Length: 288
Image 1 (cartoon, rainbow, N blue to C red):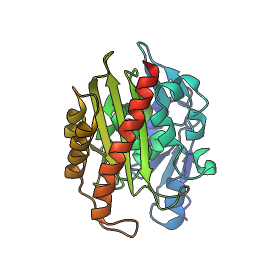
Image 2 (cartoon, rainbow, N blue to C red):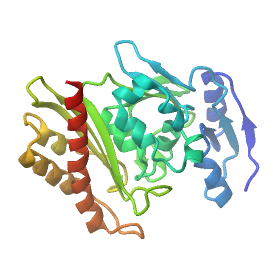
Image 3 (tube, rainbow, N blue to C red):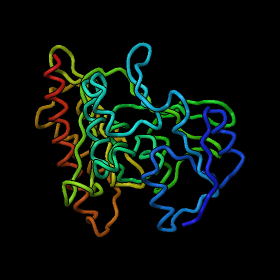
């Protein structure tokens, strides 16, 4: 393993300057991906910019008008300790707590899971279904980017040189969400398929908004607009759920690998989509 320079900035501006001044530098939030990649020889950064000493990006805070900001260095395990976040966005919190093992989650972060840009990342479908955004800092200032626009392909992001994710922002919860994945094992495995759903219902039980996101079936997580549209205006009856599942299957562009065939992934995407919508529906009903 290489021995890169190590920096521990105390401000966002210092971190940006370090990253912008060295094209080989990499930010470190939890380190559960980059350290493994360095040890295996897959990554050899010239410098590590540790973000954990930057004040204000290590926790969860409520946003004005509702919603939450989750700091870049907030460990996944700790998300469960924020009762308001866990009650509002249980699917996001559950997805974050499927990453790796307990030991991994004690270090791993949502921002790191996102920026590792794995198509099978557990937290990303849940965040995309939630309509989450990122606050990104860089040499030209700050910008807000949809989570869905951060991954550009396996192992690649849309972040420009010197940029890093400061926090992930969840909007006010208008309904309920859920996340499910399919894996050969229940723990310490990578999703063969993962599906996140976010729903809103009116007082009559009619779906007024729906977002369905699918992971591990394309180079990046897919927000399947046709799947959400199939649910809007319905009571999420069997016919609506089948139309939604058909839209999910039609959007899939998976590969064959040792964890699952393209055919299996496509079929499972439709099955999981139906299940996860039912869970979100139950949660939305319990809030009514």
